[in-house]
Length: 418
Image (cartoon, rainbow, N blue to C red; front, side):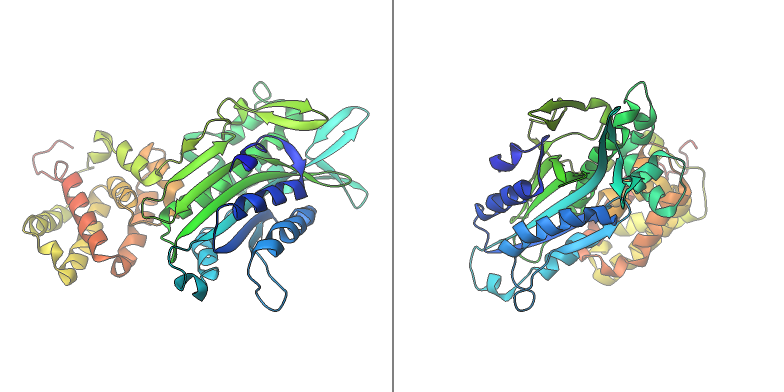
């Protein structure tokens, strides 16, 4: 992966990035290759898609039909990772040959592209603009709307991602004292690629592949130029899901735009930040949520009739009746309904941290842990888990019951202060 690491932070030709990624993928010895490409819907990303298809996909991927092959693709406003894409993509690239090859694994390359336009004028460089059909135009329009006051649903989803873990990156990008206005859209595109790649990794960490899989996740920013586009490699995630341990490491730019610096090297743009050369392990956000549960979360709003139901569940768990499959699911539904009345925030944090709630609730769980969201958002998580109790593995049901009864024991005592 050293070849890719050398590209991080630099501006390169599109074909050079894709060929370097291709050679790195080949060097792993994977028996099968798959690919996923996440881009903005903007037609200016056509060149990025073409080059990835020509220089990576056609060289490595199996044929879909006759001489045709393709990457799994998502294209939407801003280039957002769509939840559920990783399992679908991985499923598509499971072939019978792998089962006949002991020790074989597949490699899936995920290229995440945000984009930004650039124009060179007599007054200097204008980031965020491009010539579109002979007219000055904004690129990326979605990121421009994000930095404005748009309340479109898709832009609100982008805004939620830019506020992940409580860092208001939109506010930082708007602050002229922290970031020069002329670089605002460039830095927004860098942050966007980084954050969307993180969403991909959250899903990779949570998904158990059908066959051993190695993932390369490459966040990039396409620079839409008047002639040939170039791109900046933001970083590299390497996620090894060939074993249950599933180590995930990252090297590259961080997600705080105030830490970025720019320079020109041989006429090409270079982005720097202090952490970009250090390889670090990707964090487990479920474990992070469990570690953030504190006494404030354990308090309950007051006594309700549901206390009796929770006490009943606690007694059943103490007597190990939750190891009976039929009884355990009924007990879990009862516990979820009870804690939804008594202390929904604590309940939501527990079910997310213990893996019962879908990973797409990560941002919501972080808001709950920081006391930036309340009972309504917590019940969204609890209701979803309640509705899919029958889908949970028996061991997950048992572990969740033990966690719920353990964490709520103190707050459910009749004589505990409110």
